Image (tube, rainbow, N blue to C red; front, side, top):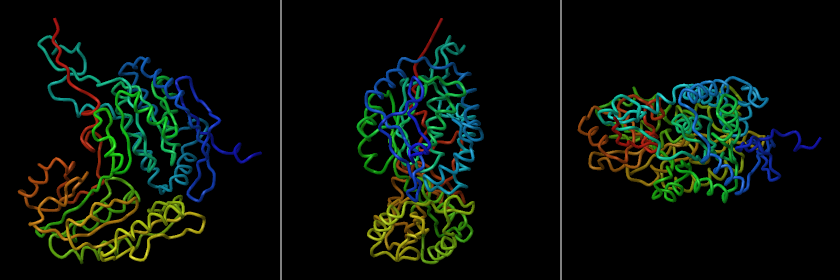
Amino acid sequence: MSVSSQLRCIDALGPKGAYRTHNRQTITDVTGHPMAELSLVPKLFVTRAMTALHKAQTLPLNDRLTALTRAGKLFATGEVDGMSSATYQHMVCRISGTPLSNVRSAVEAVAHYAASVYWSSQQARPIGAVNDWRDPQAHEGTAVWIRRGNVFAVHAPGNEPGVHSLWLEPLALGYRVAVRPSRREPLTPYRLVSALRSCGFGDDQVVLLPTDYDAANEILRQADLSMVYGGQEVIDKYAANPTILPNGPGRSKILVTADSDWHSSLDMIVDSISNMGGTACINTTAVFVEGDPTPVAEAIAERLAAIPSLPPENDQAVLTAYPLETAKKIERYLLDKAAGTRAYLGGNGIVDDLGDGSAVLRPAVHQLDNPLAEQANIELAFPCVWIAPWTREAGIAPFKDTLVLTAVTHDEKLLDELLADPTIRNLYIGNHPTYWIAPGIPHDGYLGEFLMRAKAVIRD
């Protein structure tokens, strides 16, 4: 039996069912061992699939919500396409390097969100709008909340399974959805789309379109609205396109002012840096301290140094694993950017070779001299934190372009300034980790603000 015949097949899921192409990419685990083959579809297949989505009829609301709840449970606990949940989670852990405990938590979160996603989406609806023109308020005149289109596309990331909960919202609101999976970890969207189809969504309602880069652009071109993920270059590329919502680095931060005791917030600070292996946009990138940051840096480094280096399938693993050469590339980048800073952890390197072709990246803690130093906005996908002094003279400038800022302070005037700044997208006041998130609470604004609009309606 050939190696290829032993690999798990991750087919495209088009409007006429599963499709296995001749053009397939081997998906390996973090050691380089082949795990699966991903079918890559050509541009013509994309065009036909997107046309089918545009022609399809949206499922009635109650049918959508029932199917979403059932699919979330099946995805998290059931057998999908012959694969148990335990096998799926282990494969994702080995392919992505995400610690198994993080995979489990993310899978549970997707199931929970699938059951509550419509309620969550409604938190974005304007208070003066209703969902249906048949609502009695329409006799007196009202606003009706409607979709801005019918077909939604997402270029999905592959860093951890939980990110796939976000595109369930347009599905709940009646969009037909096309998912282009990351070739880093395509198994999660394959399993989720398969579960949705098994539970009531038609093949022309939600599709999985693995592609090369050329065909990927065609998905965006043919969708009404889209969401893409990537680095700053992705943000810059799509910033001026009103139909595409780019998601990039979070550069989340923590500020501790002199009127607060950092010792009582140390657990929260360390957890904000290391939770989820430090890979998320809501992990803390920089900590600012009013006064001497040295004791804070020393305490953070002591805590982070105690994290063990373990393979991702170990239940005690915290750190994300990478192919060894990928890890070394990230290490070289860090050492270059950190030149001239004071290193508490990671000054001589961060790669911890696991001896099987993979490595984990050990935490890095560097102290900066200036709150406006460029390093404070360098976000890397492992527990890497920059510690900087902050002064009142610096003001709120160091916190601009931040997804989440946790401000440990009692200064209400400062909090007013931070809240008013539109580039600080979320403000957590007090002892709340930057990774906190909950259904119904905006992440980077409400997604519904992008998906929907209000239309005036009055009827007899």
